[in-house]
Length: 614
Ligand SMILES: Nc1ncnc2c1ncn2[C@@H]1O[C@H](COP(=O)(O)OP(=O)(O)OP(=O)(O)O)[C@@H](O)[C@H]1O
Image 1 (cartoon, rainbow, N blue to C red):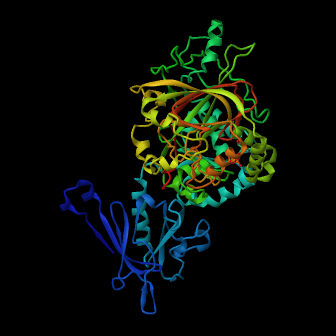
Image 2 (image 1 turned 135 degrees about the vertical axis):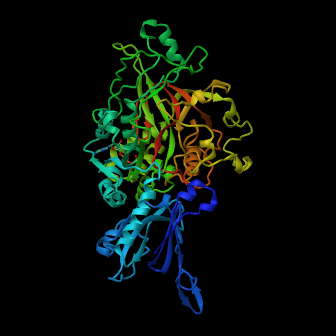
Image 3 (image 1 turned 90 degrees about the horizontal axis):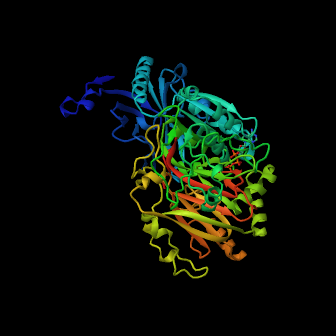
């Protein structure tokens, strides 16, 4: 074993301070190697006549595809193998890729490096990988482990303590098994987990809402083992008591009503608070009455513009606090949009390695006046989607068939499609100058004619890991967060309206890729650009709507290129229905609202994920 000093000639202080450690060790499948500790990771070189092991077939050398380095940022744990031997059964329990399954010389001691490899068929799918290095001297193994741990401890953003909610009935009722499948990754990474298995709908909401920031401060984040609806419940519990922001503008006719009755408004406070109770069990269609003890100040001014100088208060338990999702649901669109793979191991690795991506969140406010209360806004949040009409009806219908598991969506979807109901409504949305081009309906569109041929492919910038679009402006960075509207202070904006009968009104905050819609509802939606995508599906013949839906289900399809589809990219909208027939589906939660307004908060929450590699 040699311990070499750093390269003092480099002139680079940080590099000079990094001492390089190097040892001759054995690596299974490769043989003897020189293992070197570098400033950013480990590398090794075979000592067997310059090759990397492998066998010969018909005189052709077969070189196994074994890496020769691993970065610290990709290592989630390192350990001395128990009693100098590898407990293979233990080590292979969470993954397939095992770089050390040869028989072990009992004379040897081993240390194991736990990392991952990207699947060859799907780069987003991460598979656990273990590198087993052997050395006769146990102390040498221990020293390597200590050195590597020193470097891992310097990796920023890795969680040490997590609060984990497990939804046992999620998806195919295998939330508990999903957690048991990934738990060894957390144990090996020495991440402490407090696990709460939910007993009922609303349990996680209540815990998140009632837990104080002081208590949450001992955690680096909260993990949902479940589906989109379950994540949404946790998110709402968290935000309901911590996010205080001026409401979005109410629909104009609602304000008119109020103006006629000035007593119904209390302008005393500028900041309204989203005080709500989770009441799904008692009546899934009716959120309990909002407890709006604070005064109400709708942001909509006479000209319909936002007031932008109002305080937004957002009390995070700590700056490192993040959310995580281990997919166990029926759709898992948020996971697919943020890790790229619907795979619990991949998600667990993203969490253990401390990956980070921020998400826009839409705040949805139901406006209501009652005989007893003055104005009753009820607030909810959604991270991926808010949909009225078809999407609300499908969720309502599918709840009757939960016993079917994920197939209930196909069954309910078919029933609702055949019913073909449309709803009369008015939608007003904030047009932002820079987005004007994409929001003006294309006058050249013919009935049913596909427009995509005219659209250049390069117009679509797909959101991906380190996305340039999401990174162009700073996202949330302190206890105050910017909503989309302040980001647009300098931009010209005005309210536009669309009125008519709609089969569905949808607001996609992210692309919503899922197994039924491989490109999502809007292929080029971004995770953190401050916009949502309004999708207004006007009433149209059955067959055309079916065509639209089949385009959604087809990779590379063109679901937005029909003349009955209006697509607007906007930071805020209002909605008024004339009748009260359908419900809103907010990431799986049903929310009844005759009058509703919504605004996007850019990068409001951060997830343990890196964004999809597409
Ligand atoms: N223990 C529980 N029993 C019954 N319902 C629960 C329980 N815990 C949570 N829930 C509720 O179940 C709802 C659906 O959960 P989840 O999103 O995990 O499953 P899903 O609907 O199958 O998946 P997806 O949302 O991805 O389609 C959540 O909104 C949550 O309120």
